[in-house]
Length: 418
Image (tube, rainbow, N blue to C red):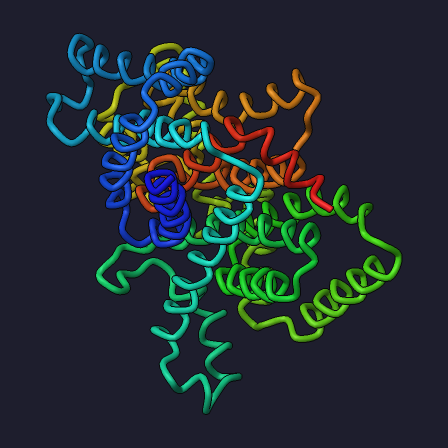
């Protein structure tokens, strides 16, 4: 019983620490190694049985890792770089370790435990972003709140920076906020607790600070998927209250729209006009279109087998003739990035991570709207950013995509709670 408590509390700590993983990269993964050993030691037989049950899910990242090693050792790399330490180990720490840890918790997972883990994750994300907020504004926020908020919006929550000794990138931060906002919003409709609603509201507010189109869209789609179903379960009075609160938030967002959103909107309209005129200029849409068009031109070079783990120097060769993207090290699309890196194996890996939970829901006829909402938030953001490359987001993504798959029974049970 004592050991079980330790394992449960360590899982809650991991869920909370995921909120800080966007700051400190793969530091959390080394803790997962220790916790995985403890969980396996406590119930080795059950762990082995679960691996056999989920062998197809676990086999795909293992095959991808084997293929990448084979590619690096036996295929001639165009970049001229030789295999080195720190590349394959990283793949192992993420794509193999994280799903195995999530699976190791399955024997004692329950609806109550899952609910606490979700709340711990949302709390961790909120806490780190509140710390980031006051690091940017200082105590001046209390004396000049309007000016401080204008600065936050115009700077897009400070952009890419190095706070608290960590390394924080805007797009991974926005994706994590989008995911946490979806989960907290759905939990508010399920639990009907005022404090969870406040936490959801603050997470959405922090997400708005980033002024990031893809993550904002991901939140709206994810919240719609989870919210429509759960909204139907509310009583008439609760539905009225929910509609009223949402209407107030929506009206306030339009009436008090920050200047940062107006500037962002004008920039986007200007970029679209330039693109329609055949002039790729701008800092958001234009570079992405230029990178994706460039990748299309070199399709024959990576379509089947990819160009290998050392693909970034090759991308720079492709981009060399374009002043707009010459300094870019990626293609700003997670699916395309892994396709270029690992060919059909890389593309298959990323697609499978999203497809497996949905296929399991369909086969078992157990649809979790919370899980679907979370998957949608991650999926949309991944199409405009290489979130599966950044250490700031990869652990979080793999943890929750694995949880949506392994803990489907608990997620559906959570949604049926009275």
